[in-house]
Each structure stands twice: as C-alpha cells, then as structure tokens.
Length: 84
Image 1 (tube, one colour):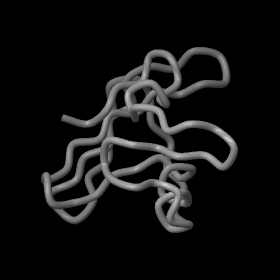
Image 2 (cartoon, one colour):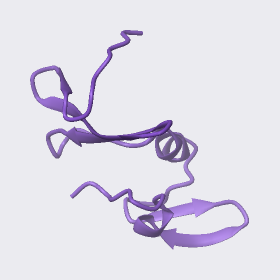
Image 3 (spheres, helix red, strand yellow):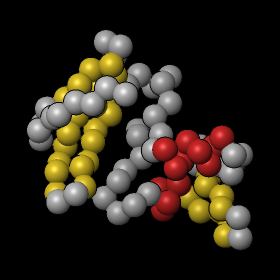
Image 4 (cartoon, one colour):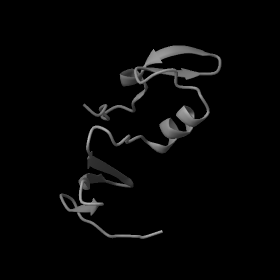
C-alpha cells in the first residue's frame, strides 16, 4: 500500500485520468473529491461490497436485508453526494 500525506486542496493523480482531491479536513473526517472518466466506477467500499454481494439491484437502488429498498441518494451519509 502506498501511503501519501496531503493537505486540504492538494491532490494525487492515478493513471493520468483519475484525480483524488482533499476537499475538507474536519477532526478525524476527511472529505475527498474524485474526478474520473464516466466509464470508471467509483464507489465507497461499503457500496462496492454490497454490489459484490448482489445487494444492489441497479445504480439507483440500494437494498439491505430486512429493510425496504431506498433511493441511493438517501443512502448517502449527510453531506455526501452521488457522482454525476
């Protein structure tokens, strides 16, 4: 694993076409911005794992065992936004 130190508004570039930017640092929480081509899937790990387990039916729906399906925007933590 490569470990990098970055400050607010600094970034890293991956494979010439993916940029990760430190948007905000507040306490122990870091907000990151990801710029990537549309054809490159970008997911938070828990969403990626849910997709791998088959719990996400399509891009707009998240399902959790024992819970009715919710819109993916609603499943985001407050302050997060879906990639457009």
